[in-house]
Image (cartoon, rainbow, N blue to C red; front, side, top):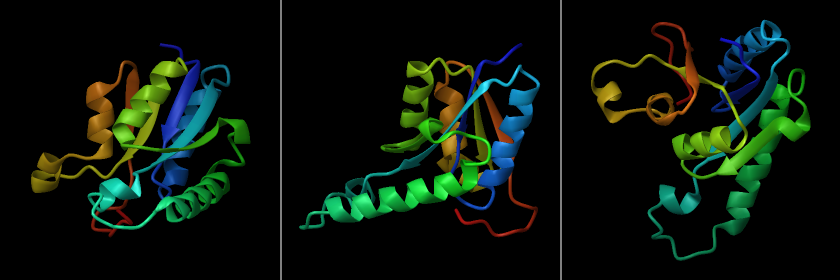
Length: 150
């Protein structure tokens, strides 16, 4: 299987570098396949159930700017700025949408390899895997016993 366009979906934690590095390696073995990287911000209205009687637009804009800066810190050495994307929405839905609209043939995501109850609740990587039209690589992140940012 040869890949032409790889989408790296990151959560902006310190583990994001590890996920991107894996995609860079795959790209180099596939005639320097194009790499796009994205982070998805959930809308503040979703997080608070729409019950806050105030305009959250400026706060959402600040979160968006912070995410773009952090994504550039992570990606700038491997991914050009026009291929760095911060979108607002539900992560698995937005990753699937981007992949379909941009002819992505491999999605690379980080996975903490949760077990038991956390597995039943689901995760972004599980959601991406189950709805993807292309290959998905879940990169194990976080050391055993280590607390993560999620």
